[in-house]
Length: 84
Image 1: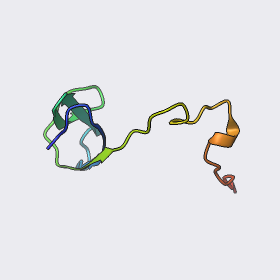
Image 2: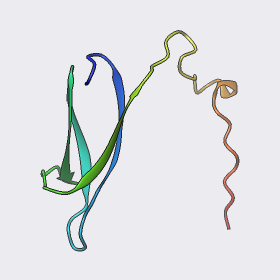
Image 3: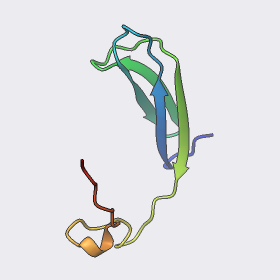
Image 4: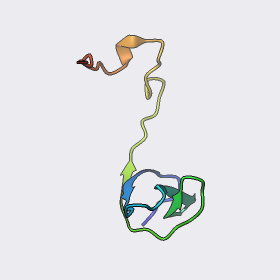
């Protein structure tokens, strides 16, 4: 059941056979509904198999809810990327 006003993360993969044009997932939503369809990269809907995971997330509130990019102390620290 979808909750009006809730936030969701939609992740998934489209299955394509060799020679088919690449496709992506499109998420269509209304206040209490969510639909997923597959389409080619130029937006033409296509019938493809796909796998999808829908997760409801909590959105923090308040002045420190989201890091401010100008304050590096608030951003998660990532290890350096090693290159060959």
